[in-house]
Length: 180
View 1 (cartoon, one colour):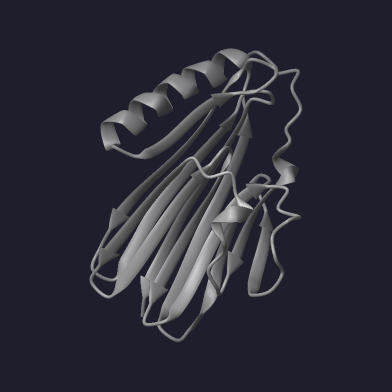
View 2: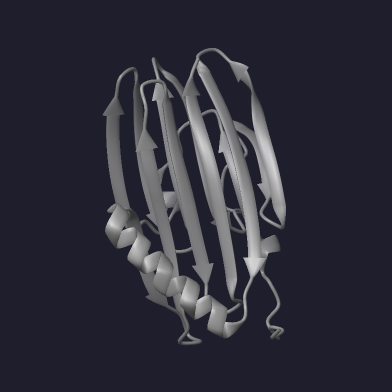
């Protein structure tokens, strides 16, 4: 068994849920996709080590943002903020036509395990045609963000994976937006 000398910076990440849309200028966007399916419309944004998903039905809106820190994001419309540390679940009390549930998991990996996971996630992103963005920071370690989604008649499911090479952090979220 190998032990990583790295410390996790997972406490800097937060999942923030809003009852409103967020402005793209608040994020360093690297990729964007829009979907219209049945009664709902979805817009997904991918940023380095973060994402935003906006789900809208008949003028009602929910937006999930997972981002490092997030202190620059507005408080107006914020329903819930969840620190991304360990394993957590959250379910929004339904209001109007929208339902939402999410789970967050973090793990800090050794260098070898991190690099193996990074390769697997790059392969997964290519095979699933998922949104992805890879970059390097000053430490030279590769980082990767992946956003994969599935559309159903009354639900939009998505999974995010944010790999931070400098700390060996893997942050995974699974969320479901639902038309009630």
